[in-house]
Length: 384
Image (cartoon, rainbow, N blue to C red):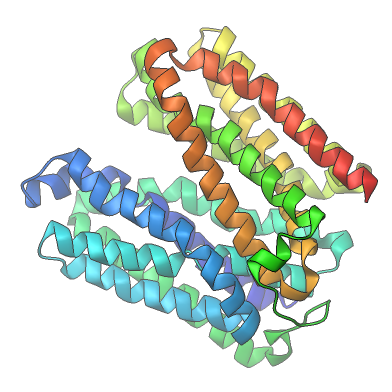
């Protein structure tokens, strides 16, 4: 595998992941400048970005298959860099919202096509450990995006945070082009025949339906519960918003632990077993948060949740890279879109229950559902 290109794409993935969280800490400052409320600003700069980020991915897959995944990633990153400049120059909340929509639409094309490229150039036997290593860039981006935005915004103003993000996207766009210049053979490197497959055509394949329905259910069950942990920690334990956010970084520590351990795990057990054990770890983590009213236990449970989630999700990701070998860009775009749709559905469905009964029943529901979802996936792998 071309290591320089792998590193360059990791930079692009880091920037894409960081862009999802960079505005979280900046809402009060932006609200003051635009004479509005933090909630209204959140809709303008976070909700619009997330919708654009998730919706565009299904379009980027066929584009990457047609024009080249790495070239498409580089162009998407450079477009997102320009969109960050639009955020820096925005004079009104509406202008900022428009710039964030463009930024989300551009950034949404990065990570799925990176995963598809890995599927092209890495053998299936080694793919799960390579995908897990690639997760490091995404995990670090998600974990540091909020912190970097807050630190830079506090020191230099909120516009400086978007300027920093623009610089990261510029590197994420230029670095793959330089790496391709040095290693032109890595432009394709596909392990399967090139081709174009429409999403509706792909859905006629039972295995494709199984994989994307599983990731939809995973996203709904996982994030329908996980998204409310920060608020629940504040309500149940009286911790501050900042403290709750700091505690949630324990999830990223668990994810990093999995990325470090994946080589050993893959060498001693099958993907199906890794997925099952990951779902059991998720069940344990959610049950601990629900049933043991100690903040220290919640912290340990978050580490377990991070480790378990990526055991399960990385197994699904690996299967997604092989479900349409002749059109991996399309396959990973479908996969990512269904994950986002599942997350949105889970959060929306869980919201009224959280308001009425609090977090613990949601956590117990997730602890019950996730092993069933993983068992369904494992049975499908066994049949293949």
